[in-house]
Image 1 (cartoon, rainbow, N blue to C red):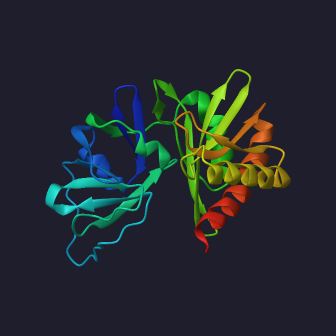
Image 2: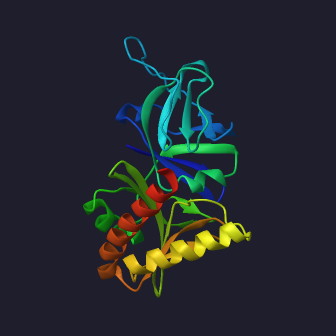
Amino acid sequence: MLVEVGLGSDSLVIDLPEDVLNVLPFKSELIRWKEELYFTTPYMLKTEGVVGTSYVVPGKVYYWPPGKAFCIFYGFSEPYSEVFLLGDYVGPLSNLRRFKTGSVEVFKHVVADDLKDVVEVLSRLGYSTATPLDNGVRVVVASKYVGGVRIAFSVIKEDYGMYLESDTFYEYSMGFEGIRSVYRFKSKVRSYSNLVRFDLTEDNYLCLTSVVKDISSLERAVNDLERVYQFIFKELTIT
């Protein structure tokens, strides 16, 4: 079940067990600790006989019994104490790094009507999808694992087409090594696809982007993005 966590003009969506519906809606306080967002809840997870963990996977949602909290991990930090796997965050992890903290409203997520055509295509391709708020505007976010790599991106629908932006790789540096790395990846990406670009986010992180004119081109762009993202991820992580 998709659950939306709203803070003003922005929100995030997590996929949780159906019984969470019993405590919705509720209000809480979203807190950041290291590379984790968490908030207390009225939900009580039965942990008797269930194996917990002190090692977490970015993009997963865990339950922390001492605070009755839902914890969303998005980076390299590990939990303060034992947690229990509960569900998944839907969308790019980089969105969580810049998400504001404070008072939130937690409620059942409903997919925006005007974005259902995009959601249908991405769902058919095996993605978990949602339509959270981004600066007051509903956008599509999607994520899934391909070959052990978490692929995630946002889709912004405009009158002239759709803009896709992937999860980020690393922060751009104007130093010699940084510029050389960008030129190298730009060349590689262009050799793989004429739809996907090695690009910058508005906050200076490197990512993949694509612009498509209509829904008929979306599937091809997503397939190219998957392939290129896996290549760059493996280049950055395999020594």
